[in-house]
Length: 344
Image (cartoon, rainbow, N blue to C red; front, side, top):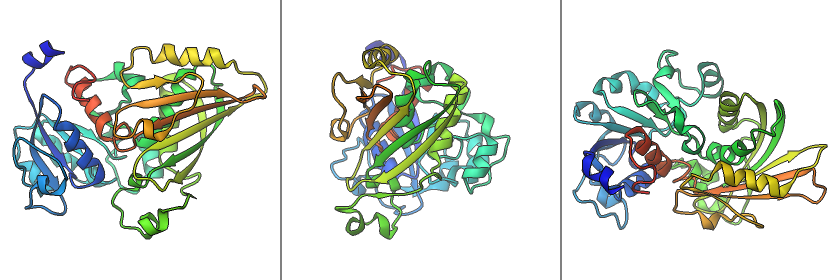
């Protein structure tokens, strides 16, 4: 790792959408990366102030003034742009942004889905020719597909937790299969929405479902499984809002008429993730959210239920890090040929 650091030049980075939860986590994590040189931070609010003043305990080597997002177009020295804009934000400026000749890692859903699915699930209108400029990379599953000439669409948080739980068993998934996912996220997953239902008073001491049967991460999961493993999986996804700040727990259920062998499945997971820096397979227990909060890790536990015909795969991640910011940096490392865990 040290040899890589000494021969590789700093990466000049611009971040747009810096004042959202994901943008804040991104700059905090990049601050510990030995090759990250942040030269631009932009937002639609708070511009003119310094980013250091908005994040407690952040000690940057230089004071960065927040500018308007669109002012990034004045920067011709960028190697990489992280877009933390809401859905539809990058689409609206992409044609101008790509003229900067910098790679882009998008943390929204603007370029995750193919054109037909995008039109169905997202309100933003996307030029059908721009989708080919991006590829969807979840490092533990398809990092071999990294194309250094393309931009990266960073996976969604729910999709990350569910795909990491499903991919190791692709061999035993049927060509067409219904999978039930009971998944729960901390309140930060909703972003700084300002909606009443996301306020402390409404969320505290409460548990609620939302977007049942209509969550955008379900087609994202189905698309990757179909593309990588040629399996037409139908994900029945039931999201819940947890009264905690951060973290996701996804409990994946597969029901069969035939029996499952728990030991064999655990061994298959360990084999699949044997070279992974960030996925840990637990023995004889299921994971807890607190084990992965503030990290880039995913913990996975496996349980075959007493009838031996019901398989539970339980996955936990930090929605703001492995589900967004630190995974984006993991993708940055791959895109620039660095050690995958550098700075993480």
